[in-house]
Image (cartoon, rainbow, N blue to C red; front, side, top):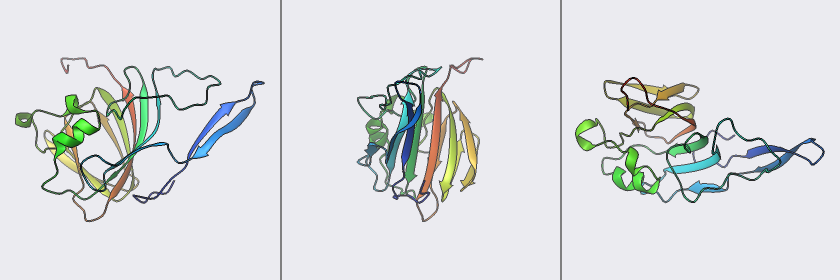
Length: 184
């Protein structure tokens, strides 16, 4: 995968023949790319999703269908995506962005957030920084992650801010979760 924001990358999917032989079912860039999200340079590359876990492994090698871009993983499922995140701008309209990415319900109420990008999903998110840097804000604290760092985000209020002067590329694996211990 090209780690540089804006550069294409390959999505290689394996599958099975009718006699159970392993094959390369597809080898091409992701087909679901969203870049008209209300912020220049913000791009969502939807790589794959599973509508349930355990995931169904069958001979259907087609990408699981979805009607629109959705921030969270499917209920009971998983999602992998790559994001290109441009340097932060003070005039970014995050309400519009969250509407366009199917995450308006995840956008945290203004009175409860540190930054306009604050949101919360009912998921475990593994974020792998591929290039650049990104700052993760939570209710109490923040940390800047650099290329090679991995963030495990566990259903918390959080926001992502690119405070550098270069775009960041980060891959996310999202797994649907269940809140307990009063975290609902």
